[in-house]
Image: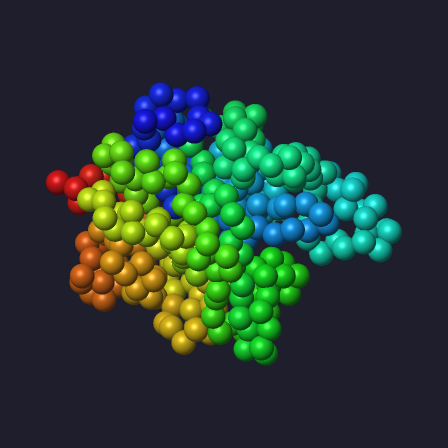
Length: 324
Ligand code: FO1
């Protein structure tokens, strides 16, 4: 079985469920320790939005820039060596400039949006973009249809994710999430083929935010069920270290939702799905609260490429042991 749009003849061996910045770090480690075509990534598109007439897919783009070594590593999103002439001109005109669109990045949004208007699917466009960036892995959006993460706030508003995250800098207190459009979205056929191929060695839930990166993927009908029905080890890497997120509002979100900022809370988000969990050495003691799950405690902080590769290798070996 060959996933549509790829240049590869055999089925992937590892599937990662991934959000943007933190997820992409582990994706890169996996990309380097595996034959790249053995890696498939299903990316969150719940952060996607329409802005200035363009369709923006931040997590897909973050993964694409990261795997093609064209990302701004300091920010974790956008392109390296970026210029901002268009945004500056837009600002001078009094246009909307709260979302940081660099000139190089804009080319991707223009390309994608034009092809969507011509009737191409997001999956087809994604395959074409990743190929043009020279990425040799199968990267699939979680659905071709729009599924938008909506943040419900204590002050009674329903904010699209980027409005909460970038425009309001995660300030509003949250009370819950809705994945708008999920009920009618369809899982990509290529993804179900990969899960059912019998060729997968492991499914890895990247250290992304469960509420706004992984649960949106699992909200697409059929994806969670296909994973739960398979006998492939599913291993989650916790995005928390010592009760704090490496980046982003996860710890605050947990507290605002009335949940402790612990690895137990992360595991609970993936109930019925996990074969094991990888936590940071700092949190070794949490194994007591995760007695229903095999746990691997290793260094999960990924500062360098070596860290990303080492963690990827640790996670794969852990999954192999769970399979035995
Ligand atoms: N994050 C910000 O904090 N500010 C921005 O202005 C911003 C612009 C942006 C443009 C393109 C893109 O692909 C990502 C961008 N991000 C920005 C990151 C993005 O909001 C988040 O990384 C994800 O949606 C969360 O995973």
